[in-house]
Each structure stands twice: as C-alpha cells, then as structure tokens.
Image 1 (cartoon, helix red, strand yellow):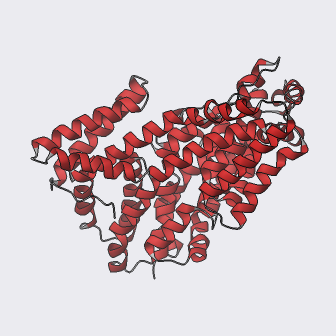
Image 2: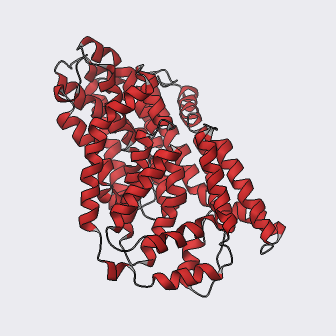
Image 3: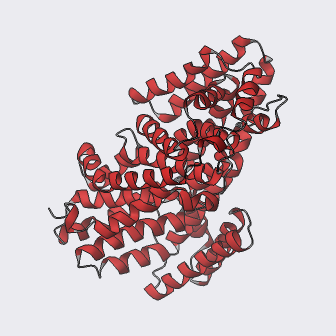
Length: 456
C-alpha cells in the first residue's frame, strides 16, 4: 500500500466533495484558463494543506505526507533526466534522424496512422517501456507526420496507443510485472488473460486509424525535402543504428532501464565524437541543453532541435508537485476514505469490475501515477475478488486495462506530462485519438464479467 498513514478519517460525503472540488479546480485551470498543470496542482496543495490544518493535522505530518508522496517518483525523475540525455545523444549520433529518414523511405501515405500504431506497438512490446518507445521511435513518427502534413494529434494518439499496447503486453514491462505481482498471478498467465480485452481493443483501434489515414498524395508532399535536409546534417551514418541495437540487446537481457539508457546514451555520444563534426566540449553541453539543428530547411531544424536535461525540467517539476499532492490526499484521508467506503458495498460481479476500473482511473486522475493506481487498487480489491469468487487474473487484467493505459491521458500525470513534452503535442490534443487507451477500460467494463473467464 501507499506508505502514508492517514491522520484524519473523513466521511464518504466529505471525501467525495473534496474530490469534486479538486477535479473541478484542475479542470477549470487547465481546460478553461489553459494554464500549465503546475498552477492548479500547487493551488490544490494549498487547499489540502489548509484542510489538514483545520482538521488538526500537524504541519509536520502534512509536510511528511508531501515528502513521502514525492519520494515515490524519484526513480522516474532520474529516468526522465536520462531520457533527455538519450534523445540529445541519439540526435547527434544520427539515430533518430536515421529512423526518420528510413521511415520516409519505407512508409507511404496509405494507412499511415495505422502503420504508426502497429510499428510502435511492436517496438513497445520489444522494449517493454512506453516512455522509451515514445521518446525514440515516437519522436521519429511525429517528425514524419509533420513533414507529410498529417495530423500531429492523430499521429501522437497512434504513438501513445501503440506504446501503451506494448507496455501492457510485454513481459519486460514494469507495469505488467507489477500488476501480476501485486495480485499474485503468474506473469505469462496474466499476459495471456489480458489479451482477451487487449487484442479486441487493438483491432478496433487499428481499423479506426486505417479509416482516418490521409491519402497517399497528400501525405508524401514535401517528404523529399525533409530527406534531403536530413542528409545535409551529416548526422546519418551506418553507425547511427548502433545505439538502438544496444538498447534492444539490453532489453533482451533484462538490463535495468536506467543502466540500459545510460549505456546507449554514452555509446551514442562516443560515436558522435568520433565523427568529428562536433567539439568535445559542445557534446557535453548538448547533454544539458539539447541538440540544435542548423540546416537550411527550417522544418527539419524544428524537428531535430530536441533533448537535453533542461527539456525534462518541466516534466520533473510537475511530477514532484503531482506526487506531493497525492501524498496530501492520503495523509488527509480523502482517498482512503473513498476506497474503504466503496469496497464495502460491492456484491455483483459487474459492479466489482466497474468499481475496480473506476478506482484505478480515479487514482490516475487524482495522483497522476500509474504504479500507484495499480498497487492501491490491487491491494484494495484483492479481498473483495476472493470473497466474490472471482479469479485473480480478472483483477490483474482490470488493473492493466484501467490503470496502465489511462495515465498518458491525464494532463498532470507522470506519463502525460512526459509524452506531451517529448512529442510536442498537448495531452488534451491527442487524447481523443488515443483510441487503444480509450477502448481498453470500456471493453473491460462492458465485457469483463462472466464472459471473460472472471470466475475461479
């Protein structure tokens, strides 16, 4: 469970009221005023701090709650900084430019969004990381969409959908392992069972992307200009594929993500230095500030000017604020109050499935952390599923269907802010087109009862 003990036990009515106020506050500022998510999250922290003090919770307990909440995301913070370095180093080694150039050569306009979705899904399963997939091939596909005058919103939705399909179905994925471990289900039995809802969602999403894909003539407009400009950068070389190969090898041998990204980044940096096109001191500056392209073709400059630790600071600051905010929701007892009240009233199979999904979605919305949505919901509902005679696989499947894939659809969540920052497409812009992520919880709530092997 979350490592914070509630210091107050509010009533269900009080918990729901605060839930509505907080969601309304965040929605008003982000959607109505179009502010960055940091502002409403910080105002929410002020509101919860005031509430805690009124309820006689000491400021030390409030502060400790924020700190404990933020500590749960420290692993992600270090990983985000390393991904910023990975993107900049893959730029100067030519890895991302090579991916973009190859994409232009192999992919025409027909079924473009569907191909983006399918290829990203395959790579996501191979890497086992939605964020790494998005930050590498996802960036390349967004560049292609821009060059082909395709919709960046739909392309980003296809990238996110494919990346999180991989996150669900890969045995290398952290969330897949977490969901099976929390509930106590064999990993491969878990993957086999989630395919009952995941495969239909994939097929439906693929068909929708085929229908939405533009015609070939329109999408190929200007592609040659991009390829010519990419060649003039001097970045693309046969060695450009080595950092990607190293990352795949590390994934196969289950090397920890931080170590794998570090090895790939260092290799890419050394390869870039061997080309001699950049000064040794400039390379290390690029690690922090990112790469800045200087071709004669402005769209390519905008495409390749990415990466660096500094590009991740927006994301990192929001993650810390959001998780600190989540800690306050626990120390004030608001989330435990709702969870405990709801789980006592569940009897029917369908109501249990729907409630599980709603809880996982709610934790994602309130706290913005997919790991916590899986852990908290799993721990809360294990006893309920056992009492109702439901299989553990049904619980682990629902955790993935409504926990893992919803996080990138929340503007202030860990995945949401990262993806919006890396792809340059706001969450609310790509959200309507992330069809796989939208379909997964709907399918599990509609058909996740007796028809999908729910009973023991």
